[in-house]
Image (cartoon, rainbow, N blue to C red; front, side, top):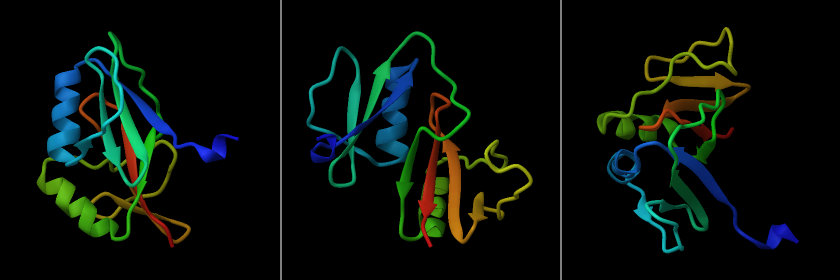
Length: 130
């Protein structure tokens, strides 16, 4: 039943204006044409995915990625995002003992992954599958 419907990722933001600037300016995401509540914002990513950012007084700090993008050329994406001021993580709890290259890209079982935080501290990731 649910396989017939798209899914949205929900992310908390204590400062919705700061979050909007991060997703619109640094990640270059466009607003999604979906209903939102209050000051919440939604961004289109991919063909059907929606990233919904909702305002809340305190954020939840997950120690794992809460959203991930599959990309075709992770080096190119990391380079472009770095030029826009995105900082990539060089230590990730889920990858103890592994070190990334100088750009923050880890290699795990032939897959390349990179991690970064949004303006609200949510951990996000990029992955280039084998």
